Image (cartoon, rainbow, N blue to C red; front, top):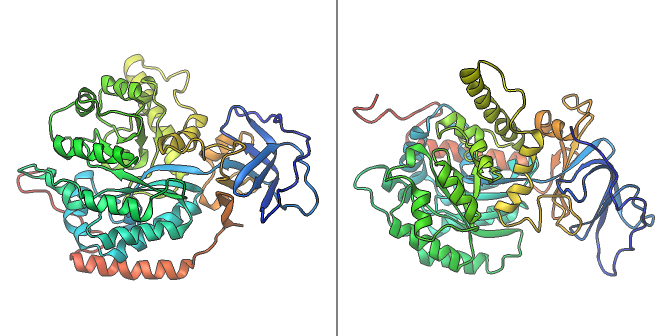
Amino acid sequence: MSTLSPSSNSARSLPEPSEGPATRTLLRGGRIVSMDPAVGDLVGDLLIEDGRIAAVGTDLEIAEGSAEVIDASRHILVPGFIDSHRHLYQSLLRGMATDWSLSQYFTTMFSVLGPNMEPEHLALGTSLGAYDALDSGVTAVYDYSHNQTSPDHTDEAVRALLDSGIRSVFGYGGTLAQHLELLSPPFKSTPSNEAEIRRVRSQYFSSDSGLVTMGFAVRGPDNATMDVVRADLALGRELGLRINTHIGMGVLDIADRPHVTRLHKEGLLGDDLIFGHCNFLTEEEFRLMADAGVSASVTPEDEAGMGHGWPPIVQLLRAGIRPNIGIDTCMAVGGDPFTAMRFALAVPRGLANQRSMEEDSANPWQLNVSARDVLEFATIEGARALGMESVTGSLTPGKQADIVMIRTDHISMAPVLDPVASIVHHASRQTVDTVFVAGKAVKRDGELLGVDIADLTGRAADAAAALLEKAGISPGWAPMPPEGDH
């Protein structure tokens, strides 16, 4: 059970704001779940100054009128959630893939829907996805954007991210046509567009200090030939990009296994890599990942529902890798981190219970994954995966103020006996009252700020309908299996 204890910062006066246009906000009397062992969990105050967390403690004293004071006494304060693997642009097609298998998804996304998407579709989908994430308390996301059919597609997706106010890594992912190549003979790989990747890096992301930075969503050894894999990793590392890839998914495992071993033998593993899914990797491959500092992103609802394979949470933990959590595709699943955390808790517990009943005819005495574990996966571990652990992921003084205020007086939450359990098991986007990104409120009193939701959703509905008409399909449609398959 979580315990609430005072911080070492308690009962002290804070320095007056520095000269200049400083902005200060004091969150007073909240139940703070810091995700930083040095700070701990406490009932107390949090001071935001110039976009950063200036102090955390009990009864922080400030001069009257020197800060906006927000009553947080009916709230839990928690670091903003971090999604390490989401295709934001696919939010435009929300619900289309709910009843699709993974094979049906790839067939339709790569060859039917993706090729018909215009730059406007990427902009609208990315905007929808970003605001959806912010509304549910996700303050940082790795946007795995893999439909860069033209420079205009890329430019519109980047613009939408920049306009949204979410902290993000724009993962340049190439075109869906490139992913389609290894789903049918003769299994070739078109090299990535190096000139375009360099243009995007130079034009939009010459600095890595902005709220939106650049990453590289490479195809990886599951669905690209090794000459392309080598070239992609070399380019990404030359440009200093955080590299994300799908690996270890059954449907994409076309060539010989094990791919992680192959990357290891060629000296290609490194702590700049995020491996998504990892469902069919071996214990030895997990060990190699751990030794090299590779991060693992699990998307538990999506993986369990679409047939990637069981989320390998226990295997990762056994290898010494603390995973992080992503949503993956909102075409199939919802976009809130609370559901993802609950799946990340329920799946390993369910698998352990099944094994115990089969092997010992008894339920396990002790559960193998805790609520605090999955809250760490969704916060500080996500920050580590994105290379942002010094910036966000915990309520640590000095870090940027990415903070979520969750109501404790909502009927679904009260009474809050253990804040960590309440966040993971009972919270929802309806209980997310206020969200700060770098100290700026992007949601306040339950309402998103800086966006005309009615206009955005109206334009998105019209664009989605036109896209489906262009592709020649309708809601509820699913592809038929290839001839000879049953």
